[in-house]
Length: 262
Image (tube, rainbow, N blue to C red; front, side):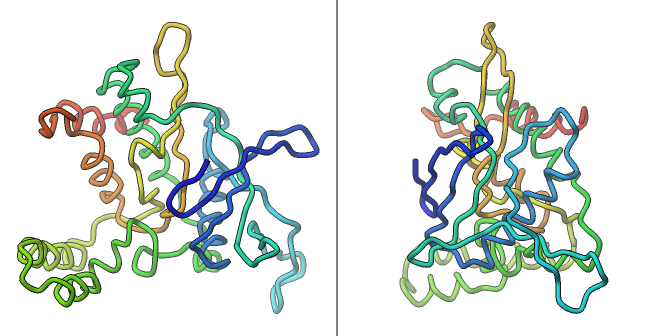
């Protein structure tokens, strides 16, 4: 199975544990380490009964210039042709968009379950400052390239490539407002998935057709960023009715209120 930026292989470890080998085709080794560090922090702080997509750590290495016993946790390796890869836990289930398209679950029930997953992720405590550099900031990467939009990088690219296009005039004031809001309002930040669309959620149904598990996967865009971005991203990609392309406020409400019970 493959996506835009990774090729995934289902494998079985020597201990008979199912896992997924992710070959991260368009990322540097450092970027993959940063992704895995965020996932590892989620796995360390998740409830005991929570199902999360966690990375397998490689053999730890002694950090230079640190106290005795301090270790540098690593997750990524490189293939023979230099492409970074890592091993993550296998999460059973089917893509949420397929389940929804098949009419197997009600949209509100699905958005409620996804909202709970996002609330748990957003409640993850950041590690102490010495470890935080390992968690990338949205200003540098991840979060669907939010940092590049805030800095005006894409406004410049769009303006140069299609200066007369109506989209540029549509985008320009919104880019400026986005930058202003993040600078002046300073919304709460934490670990965000960064790409919380339905095809990045795996769902399992019980015998009665209810949602038994709902797990976020594909953490290529994970980073430390504004928590509200995940909600906006999920709502924009999941809360519009397909036939009419109209925003369904009851679905948005199900997404938002689900975190209150976490």
